[in-house]
Length: 298
Length: 330
Image 1 (cartoon, rainbow over the protein chains, first blue to last red):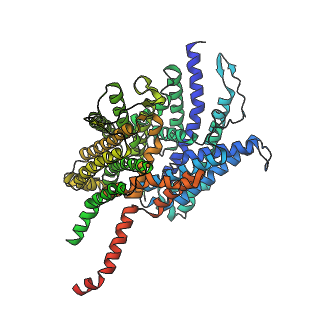
Image 2: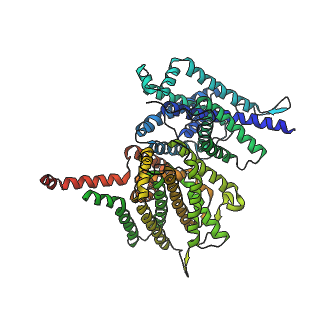
Image 3: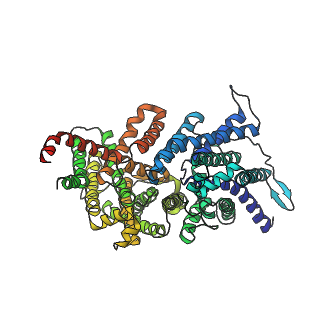
């Protein structure tokens, strides 16, 4: 196998996992630009969606096994609900007290969710059934895993839907208006309570979708969210925290960077790449590659 | 004058009172289990005091205390097992290496504006430390960890029993409390608070934000290093899984529960978060869930910490008791 083919394969694999990072980064950036908080329990929303989808997909005594599409919908719905719950119960009451309290409250929520998951589903990982074809296909001298293509395709489709929602619908326009200037939007009759809740619900749904998409690639474990959430942060900061297109670019770039360095240099320090990228980008280009969104007025 | 005395009591003497109570208790309780929990409390208290200086006083949110703690613990472990250095040398060495780590991470942290970025930088730092501990096997023995870290000795006396450790740890806590109380009540401490309240107005009265922020980072990292060194020698073994994100979170919880911007609050928080999980063992597999619920409720309903709650209650009672006299004077 030629060197270029290997590099191309690594890049494609990186783009697949990167598109999942993009979804998580989008969730972080949407919430930051719209509501000016950070959900440090995003990883657990991601994990809960993956477990829910797995449960619905396999089925049990109460519920027969469902097709993959239904299980995705169930997982995304649970993610949305959990995100909203965390926002209403923890983030909103603590937001005025200071950022430190938001973080502490969210971390409390993530411990709670992780341990609830251990109680419900057990602490060992569960294998997600292979819903996408796994056998590599040769395309023009390059081996491509169909699963990666599916993950990338569904992620990109979700991003396209998000783009259409934000730019073409009334509610999406209201969300963007409130993200730009809350009081001006309020004067136009846009309730920021509604847009805040909507932003959280949409962002959590994206994080949930990311969790379900990544599950067939890895085991589903109660701890799976922690590392993905921090990679989502890195991706968001890489593109510019709060910048929506930036989150997509940042996620894809981080995925490729990780896969290339793991494949060509050493996989031992693969998980350190995201952390190093984070510190480097904050040191040398704190606004990220595409520039972070300035503070919302009022 | 009276309120100033009260202030002085709350910010300084209360810490010594707390420590005195803790150190006298062993006369009544002899169980080795109790000593073990209290030794951990002491180590946690040092960690909490360190975090409170950077986060509570200087207002820089640090979610990477596990990283500095790990640097301290591994410095002691490596120096003691590889070079055979005694505890009395590894302890300051740990403080030094952790302080250097604090400097290395504190300088770039100056560049970032806004709490969320600083959180991400410090979390990333702790993440990098953990990956290095797992992967640099020739130095750290990787996931297996380092075992057989020797106990401290003075002449022929070895700190082996829990009682000895208890007094050794609390002697260090006492020293740290003294140094930290002197620091926060000094010009430097007041500069930290000024920076926390408003960087611009602090700058306008001649406080150099860069200098004081890095100083706070270095100071708190050094204390985390001291705590790490004590931990390594007490447990006699260190492994990377101890120094995970949850430990950084635990440190944050200590100051949130105990009292942000308060030295006695840090001690109280350190002790509380060592003891409470033990109490919650009664809940069996629901232990951590009850703990997490407690944390969430404390964050929402106890925003100024246990200590302030106690102080407020005392002040309220005092004002109730002295009301007739106060009215007479007016």
